[in-house]
Image 1: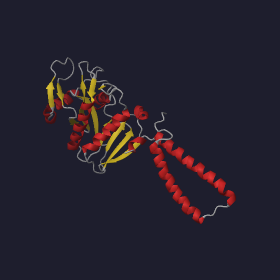
Image 2: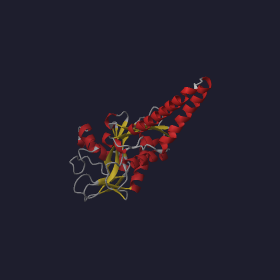
Image 3: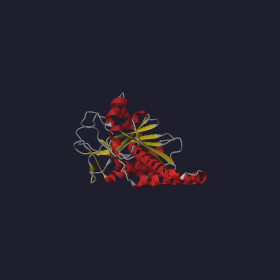
Image 4: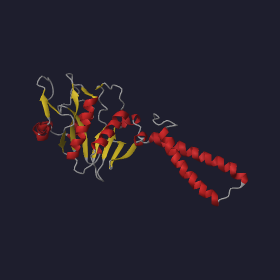
Length: 274
């Protein structure tokens, strides 16, 4: 396992000092009523030091193995955890491209992508889904233009962040497509997507919980930011939720679901720094 939290991590040391203060306070009161014989004081001191060392190492190991973090943001609960988005309760967000393409052929949509898995495993009638998307009033209000020169796939493009509700799934226009059907975004488009996305969620969620994948993780062409990490994408997603001021009243919550193979790229312990 990759060590995500260093042995002398600043946050870890800060939390350890808080634990140490509590232990010190307890020991101060205990030693008032318990007198330690002179010949045992050195042994007790060494033993106490060893216990404190064990506590620190235990906290460090726990920080590295942590695969869930619960944040309270604007009085809403946001959970970051590993898991399978398809088995989560409430609404589940699936990212589509700006065309809301449904053609899973490893040219437009890869069958191994979350988008492809959703269409192949959850949609029985693709033609019916296409008709619902094409006739949806909200989507039509957010149509940008038609790319009639596109040789494969749909022609109409939609504003990024626009959501189409299909049963328990919220399909969102997330990525742009170039002429070779490769997904891409620049950072400005990504941020605008996030802000519009949360605005759409605010209109739809109606007190239900929302589960979201790590949006942007699969895009290798995030223009101008080719080296952005999954950790940075996650922190950007959390930041956008924070500034959206959307309120999820208990017991509803937002969950960001990290796919199992990506969990070693996420420092869950760090997420509570702020």
